Image (cartoon, rainbow, N blue to C red; front, side, top):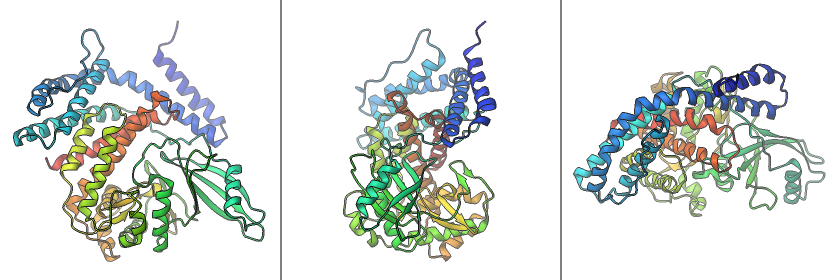
Length: 492
């Protein structure tokens, strides 16, 4: 008698986990195997949870769908072609998918009509968009809470940049160094946008140098702000010139014919990691968090004039002379452009979120500052209980210092008194921060991750071969969506 599909999936996952994993020694093989097990568990969860969940949540979504035609007519969008509903004998999951696509099309049409509606229609559209967003959030939150095993980060298995290529390009860049060799070249795990490699550079008559390569992936998942190597290089170089604990960018390589992404070489820190994308992997001492407050204060104090030549390149929408409010509005407009033109899975809550962000930019006449916006335990090295070096600047841009503060508030508050953290930030020269704006920036940064994850997952049917996308599309997607919905709850 054949086992059910679920039984086969459980057998495969159990065998890989209990029998194969202990025998795997190679880092790349162990990472690929862990990702495979997580993908099987995800498939099991979908088969077990989705039918009943879709059945339970369909009536509320169908009620929202019945309200949509009249709302579109009032907004002047009655000619929008809506995907059909799945009727007849279709199962609940199929009906839910068709309904989600239909609501997504309607939500996107309403956002497109903003500015041409009457005041009453504006309010009705906002009310409906909020209701759809909460409905979708309830669905993903329930799915996420239904017991998916912990997801272990996987390593990239491809390395288009080889030690031989790196050595050849460094020899061409540094002809004065005799006997130049690249040794101990290895890929560093993690990263969804840029690839990281460690290596040792040896040259005759010189002490070996332990260095790092930051390379653009040929298919980046999160293509926002300073994700390109040339932009990250420019920003980090100026932050390093200001004396902050960041890598020192050394050499930038652009448009090489034998490498599938630009990259740059930088110095390597001596500290150690104390966390990953899921959070801290050990107790975070207050001294470390206070050093983070100090780092933010120093970073936000770097004059915008230091970046004047970079701002003039047009690689960022922010210009010298912009206010914080103008800079944030430009950054949100950029995200809206990427979102509205991207291939993505239906998610009408995304329409609600970007609409809310566009309409609620905080008032702020101060001068923008450089912000990291991804600075916590997964992106800094620690030595002697303090930050030794802050890395991964692909999300850096120019905006409100409150962005960095909002990003870490929940994590910091879990380990120390938040007022003490902010008092130390201000004592170290931190910029004025309106804490009433923190929810806005929490929503903004989570939206970046929220729809960026959607875009990445959408590439799976188009040939993206990264098995990490399977759990990323449910666990992290649900976390980011929930954070957006909760942060946007306070205002219309």
